[in-house]
Amino acid sequence: MFFKKWAVVLGLGGIFLLAGCIALFNQPPRAEFSWTPLQPYAKQEVRFDASASYDPDGEITRYLWNFGDGNTGEGKIVTHTFADNGTFTVTLTVYDNFGKTDFISKVVKVLNPPPEITSITISGRPVIGESILFVVSAYDPASHQSPELQPLRIVSYRWDFGDGTVSVTEAPTVTHIYSCAGRYRVTVTATDDDGATSSASTSVTIYGINRPPIACFTWEITGTVVRADAWCSVDNDLICLDGKTYTHRIVSYRWELYFENQLVAVVGEGPNRVFSYDMNGFHGNWLLRLTVRDDEGSFSSYQVAFFW
Image 1 (cartoon, one colour):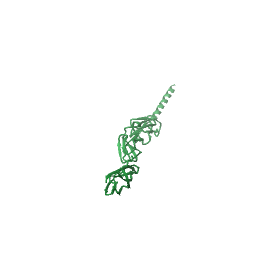
Image 2 (cartoon, helix red, strand yellow):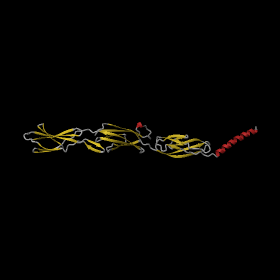
Image 3 (tube, rainbow, N blue to C red):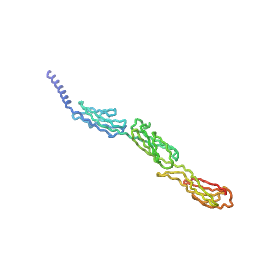
Image 4 (spheres, one colour):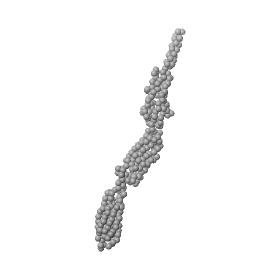
């Protein structure tokens, strides 16, 4: 019985001695980790993997993470989302089965995601001289707010209306008036509070309102010779194509001579006329009328009256 007790004691002592020797000569673990994506954006899930960590003479029993932004985690493989962009020092600490530790720190650069533009809407009558309303729907993925709340992290919108006009606003709405008809490419660039930008474009067709041309002429009478010139007649409708402005043209000039409100002659076509009409015997009220017609079919008239 005596010998059995000593055998038990010696056996337990051997175990403790062996464990102590193992702990004494235990090598620390080696911490190592990687992450994907390598350059994540704020609000993007990042996967941290410590599978490359090892213990030369045992096993790793615990993995502790410090993400450098006030948050921690535990586990061989963890995921983490950084709330904002910046440079963060991520530290992994590993423990082996005998309590020894190792740690490694790496710098993770979290990028600022550019704003996302989801739509551009246009309302109003798309005609010359009338106000058009443009509205952009955009949000910043790094913002804590949802897209529906139009987060304030987008600080400016730059509008290029395609006609040489640019406007910068803080609100996502803007109005613009086009001075001539044509098709325009409208581009909006959103900028967030960290300076990241993104752009989107749409097109708008502005229609002209066909107005009649303006008939006008100068004249003089010498005896029975009438000289008339329609140099001052114009058509003010404009259209813009390929960055150039064009004016609709007057395509016909009709000159008529009236006596006592009765048409007595059509004295010609063209922007200027010199004609002679025998008015002997016809004393009374005469009238010279010019009618101009543009290339869209609109017309107007101008007349002068004289007594002979």
